[in-house]
Length: 112
Picture 1: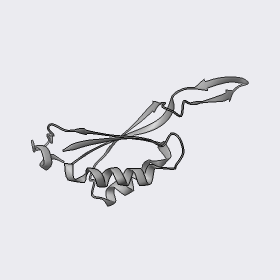
Picture 2: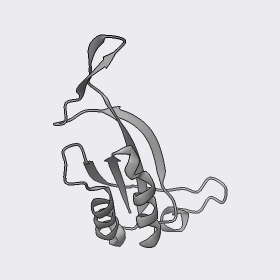
Picture 3: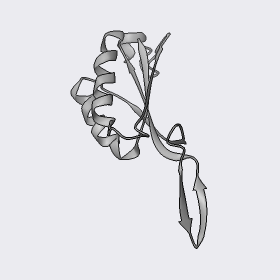
Picture 4: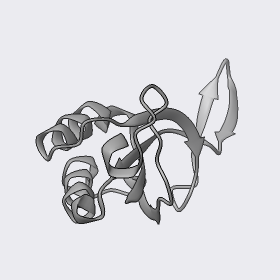
């Protein structure tokens, strides 16, 4: 099992969610986060004062999938979250040692 974590632009959330549903993903966790990378933020003017916005709003998606679904999930995220511009985000993939469904006690693949 793998954990796929993607950091994407907020306006792409609905498109990515629909794309993941189409490839068989039954659940995701989405969190509003702030961060920066090569995009490095921007300056804004507020009440006549200019200030730097270092941390930009992003969405962090976490998707637990079977190992054989990883490439399909990554491709779906890349295809729908990508705009071709700086700040599109990143995808991180890590191993999941164990998964437990709280309600039933099911383990690993059955818990997904």
